[in-house]
Image (cartoon, one colour):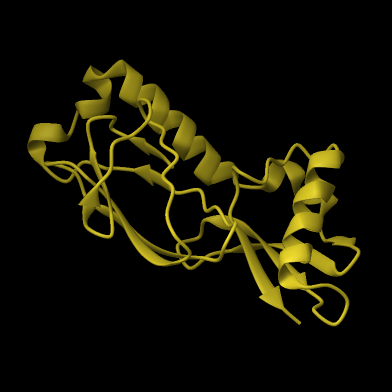
Length: 165
């Protein structure tokens, strides 16, 4: 996950987790549904519920926005957090537009299209044809296809939603 401000508190299922470095953390979780929260006094909380299957990862991007007079100019006064905020906001705004020319993408047992989640964050929706390959094989093939092609799309940086057909 990537988030800003760096001093924010990150919890998964109500348990505070320690980031591995400033603004960025890889947080291992078990398969299932998890609630991720990023919060800091003076900012609106970022709350996201994610569901993972075995072997999945799900990038979470949290840009906390001021909701009080005390933090109104926070990013102006904290350069590292401002740079992180601008970078994350750019990623949210541009989304997958830079690779849209490569979609829809089709391969052995799958089709992938660009969609927007309920919060307007872009994601890649992959339809796995389970009459051809299993869901796990589908995930492997999709990630391999992306790794081998010049899509400029890192599967670990984008949200992939897998559905069965």
